[in-house]
Structure formats: C-alpha cells, structure tokens
Image 1 (cartoon, rainbow, N blue to C red):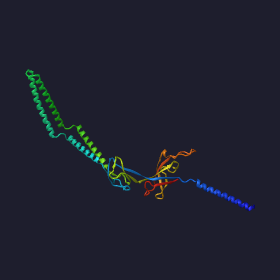
Image 2: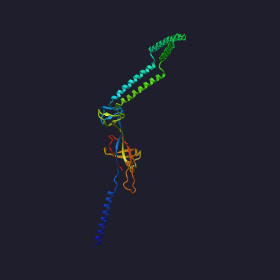
Image 3: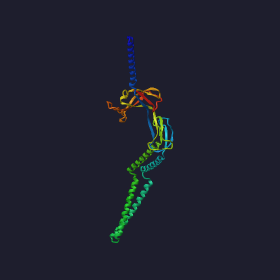
Image 4: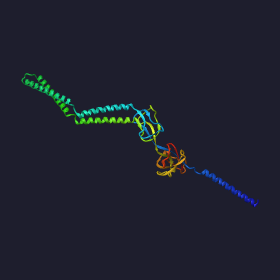
Length: 328
C-alpha cells in the first residue's frame, strides 16, 4: 500500500471517530439534559357568602350571577311570617309592660284613695258597735244574766270586726302612700325586658332583607325564587375582585427565591404575558402533600408548601381560576 493510501485511511478513521463522538455528545445532550420544572398555580380572590339568620322562603332575587354590586345594595328578600308573628307578640308585651309601669309611677287614682278611706270608716264604725256590744254582754255575764256562749260569741264578733278594721287601715295606707320603690323598679325592668325582645325580633326582621356587605361580583346564586332556605344557609357568593392573588403548591426543593417578600415572574396563558408577583404567605401543606422518595439510595421525602403571591402591578381582567405558570 502506498504512503498516500495509508494517509487517506488514517484521515478517514479520524473523521469517522470524530463523527461518532459528535453523535454521542449530541444524543447525550438531548437525552441527559434536564427539562425546566413547571409549577402551575391559579388566580384566586376573596369571597364572602350571603346568608340569613332566619329561615324562610326566597321571595325575590334582585341580582344574578355576574352582576356587580356595591355595599348596601339589596340582594334578596326572604319571606318569614313566623318572625312577623313574633314581632306582634313582642310589641303587645311591650305595650302591656309600659302600661303597668305607668300605673306604678303614677300611684293610685283619687277614686281608689277615696274608696279605701270610706271602707276604713265603715270598718271603724263596725268596730265601735262590736266593742260596745261585747262590753254590754260582758257586764251581763259578770252579773250572771248572760250565758258563757253568748259572751264568747260577742267576743269573737268583736275580734273579727277589729281584724277587718286593721285590714282596711292597711289598704288605705298603702293606696295613700303609693306603690313601693321596689315595685316601681320591677315594673321598669319589665319594660326594658319587653323592649329588648322587640329589638331582638327587629334584628331578625332586618335579616329578611339581605344586602351586600362589600362591593364585588356575584359569583354564584344557590337557591331559586320560591325555595326554602334554613338558618345560615348560603344564598349567594360575592367575589371581591380587587383582592386578587395567585396560589401555588411548591415542592420544598424549589422554594429558592420564594421567601415572603421575594418577587418572581409567572406566565399567564390568558394574557400571553409574564406577570410580576410578590410572595406574602407560605404555609406547609402537611404530610398528605409530601413527595415520597421512590428509591432508598440517599433520597428523602419532600414536603409541599402553599405559596401565595399578589401581582406587583394591577392587571385588568384577571379573574379567579385563571392559570399561572412558573418555570424553574
């Protein structure tokens, strides 16, 4: 073989070896290289439920899903006839208690005082007659003219008449002096108790008119007009669209750069752009969300943490449920 042929063979071998090395390197690059980890989260907003303290039937719904409401707007009317009946009872009890208090404060009327005085005078006159009769019978008894039985009957009549006079005297004194202070206080307390019952029922009646506590968007309406709702049953949910954040479930080995106060970039498929976000809350999701090791060769379990972050800049149209994607 000529020297030139040998040189060509060597060059071909070198080129072939180089080609093989390049193929192996390229293949290894595509096979071995690590794809970027993807963390997917979603947009969330503060939401509150509208519910009533009283059971009843939905009489009217003033809003529908998707409507925007302001604080104080009427959302629904509940028909609760039982509450109205309780209000009538409470108002009647208050009227009665107020009348009794007025009587206690004003004391007895002049007609009552005059009547008690006349009864007292009659009792005194009767006592005077009974006493004279008893004294006469006693003298006759002492003289031996009157029997023991007649004397005892006259004495019993005298004692009974005296007791009647004392009772009339007590009644007259009470009517004349008026009601005791303790009775006036008791009457006033009864009025306050009745007023409290009226206020309590009024509060329940106010619950039949459901109003928005904060402005937001009606995200869901649960019952229909005519349906019954129980105590505390939700009538609708209202989303506060101005309080927006993103929630991500992040494995702990990917928390680098996600401390409270850190900012990062999340991609929004809905807007096809990146959104700058700032972490404000991190919470351990517990053992149920742990990433379990599949090999015993030096691996260990990894926990998942809930990371919440708010957009740094206001993003118009950002709605709950929209996806947020982080590439790490």
